[in-house]
Structures are given as C-alpha cells and as structure tokens.
Image (cartoon, rainbow, N blue to C red; front, top):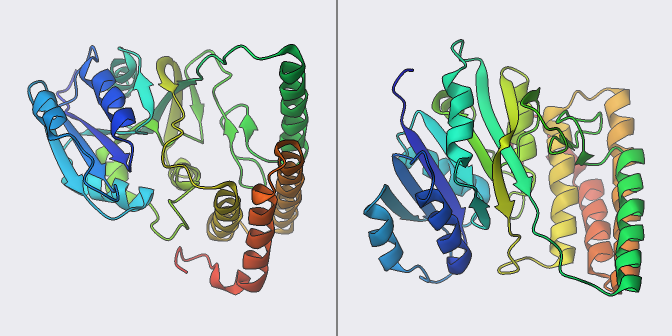
Length: 321
C-alpha cells in the first residue's frame, strides 16, 4: 500500500459546541488524519483556543478565519491543506470510529485511481417519543412528501444517480459498496488532484446550498464516485445558526435553477423535468406551510420563482452570474 496523507477540513460558523463534538469524533478515529483544518466564518470570535491546543497534541491542527460561504470556506481549506486524500465534514456530524479508515480503504484498493470521491452513510438520530396522534400526523406528512419527491423528480433516497430534473437520488438505502454519482458534501473524502481540477462554485447563493449536488455532478461526468455503508456518521442536525424557512426556500429555488442552467443539457426533456420539479417544490412548500402554520416556506418559494423568472438571463452556463 502506497504511503498517503490525510487532511480533514471542517467549515464552521457560529457552532462552537457542535464543532467540539465533531472534532472529538475525528480525534477518536482508528485511522488518524495527518492534519485538521478548521475554516471558521463565525460572526464573533467564539472559538475556544484550548480546543486547538488539545487537538494539536494528537493531530496537526490549523485554524483559519474567513468570510462566510460554504464553497469559499471549502476552497480556502483546500488551499491550506496538504493531504493526498481530503475529507470535508459538516460541523454537526459525529463520526463512528472507523469512518476515515473505511473510506481510505476504498482509495487504497483503487490502483487505477479512477475513484474521485468516497462518501459514507448518514445515521439519523432516534426521534424522541411523541403522542400517538402526532406520530400518525408526522407519518402521513412524510408519506405525502415522499410521494411528491418521487412524482415530481425531486431529491429522494435511491441509487445515488441524478434525476432528469438535476435533483439527486441519495444512496443511503443501499447496504453495499457501490458506484454512484451523488456524494453528500458533509461526509466525503476526495483525492487531492480532483479538488485541484474542480473548484467549488462560489457563485451559489446564500451559504451555497446544493454545493454538493454541483460538485458531485461535475466530477461524476469524468470520474467514479463511490458510496460505502460501512463508513457511518451521525448527522446531529444543529438547531444553531439556522436560516429561516423563507430564506432557505428562496435559496433552494435560486441555486437549483442556476445549477440546472449551468450543468444540465438544455434539451426539452431536461427542461420539462426541471420545471415539473419546481411545481413539486411549490406543492411541498404549500403543504409545509399549512401543517406548520408558518407561511415562511411558501413566501420563500414565491420569492424564488419571481427571482428566476425576472433574472433568468443572468443564469448562464459559464458558472458566473
């Protein structure tokens, strides 16, 4: 097995407690990285320097302050890294102890170096006990949302390929290592040369929602991406520093439209599939607004529709706008 070095990059913003738990899980890995790079875009200097000192006792740790924006933070982290294999972790993930080992094992056995990236499996936290009627209501809503996702070509659990609309099938239901197209951005390792050839797109709106959809799609057109269910991580979705529903939904519409114009062939098939999916997003948002009695999601979708209608000419295929 050839010698290779490992970098772990953790972009973060205003989540010091989540970051501590994430880093603890990295430091407890059976296969330790050679370096950890924290790219912090917090509004204030909330970071505990004692954590850097403690992390440095086990692994070389670099702390960077930068402007907010997930793709900008990732590109900044790549520039500061030196590993042959580079991991990106969401700051609210907690890795099982063999996570890095399982992913690196796939790279080590790929002698032809055709594999660009390897993604692990997300484990969702167990839900707290709820009243029976509320449980039934939640279950019904989830079924309806799943039907909408299937019918309207939106993102859903599946085989890890991209749908005609440009939305991905998440590969998490498979129980074996397999080739996929889509890799989740927050628990994936990439070969260094891939990150040099393909930069993360800093033109995405907001905090760069769908950046993993964009990066996976572009890379998968040329290289192999792999999913392994043996590298597991808990995504303990943080309630800290979350944007409101209106902003999130508008960003979803803006960025999905931008990526559709940028990446997908502008054929009748793909156009029909994409705009059909937008109808599905509106139905889903309406359902969410009615159930939660919060019109924020619906307002965000409407704002997004207005945005892509009025400014559609600014969304070209060059990756700039």
